[in-house]
Length: 219
Ligand code: ADP
Ligand code: NI
Image (cartoon, rainbow, N blue to C red):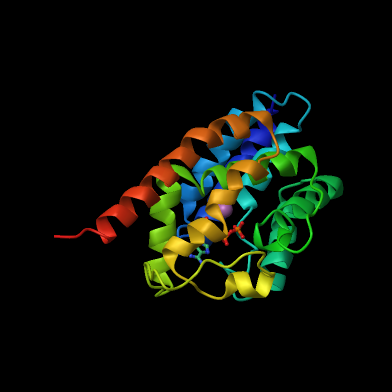
C-alpha cells in the first residue's frame, strides 16, 4: 500500500517524465511509460514481497537517463538525482531506483547478465512485455522508420550473439524480431510475465509468417 505522500511523489514523477519524453517519436513516449507502469501493477499483484513504490517510481523513470533518449545521460542522471532529493525521497530509495534504471535494458544485458533486485525484475518484465505483442510490432516499425532502417531484406541474415556495439548498429526491422523480440518470452523473470508473454509471442510469430507469405506472393 502506498502512503498519501508516495502517491503525491509518483504524480510529480509522472509529470517530470511526461515533460522529458514530450518530443520522443521513437516509441518511448509517455504512453509507453504509462503502459509499463500498468503492466508493473499487474505483476505486482502476484509479487507481495516487492516494494510497490520503488517498482512504480522505477517504471516511470526507466527510460529518462537512457542514451537512446538523451544525448547527455550523465547530466540527466544528475538532474534526476536532485529532483528526487527535492521530492524528499531517501538516499536508499534513490540508490534502489538508480540501480534498476541503470542496468535493466536489453542492450546492457547482452554481454553479461546483470543481477536485478525483485523490483528491478518486475520493471524489466513490464518493459519487455511492452516490446512484444501487437504494441511491440507497432513500436518496432515506428522505431525503424524513425531511424531510417529498411523494413526487410531476405538477403540480410539475422545476427546471433550480439555485442552491445553490434546491437546498436542498424539491421532490418524484421531482423530485430529475430535478434531481440522473439527471445524475450524465455527471458522473463516473474511467473506472471512469463504467462502474459505467451500470447504476445504468438501474435509476433503469426505476424512474421503472414508478413513473409505476403512478401513472397506469386501471381
Ligand atoms: P532497451 O530499452 O531494453 O534498451 P531498446 O531501447 O533497444 O531496448 O528497444 C526498445 C524498443 O525500441 C524495442 O523493443 C523496439 O520496439 C525498438 N527498437 C530498438 N532497437 C531497434 C532496432 N534496431 N530496430 C527496430 N526497433 C528497435
Ligand atoms: Ni522502455
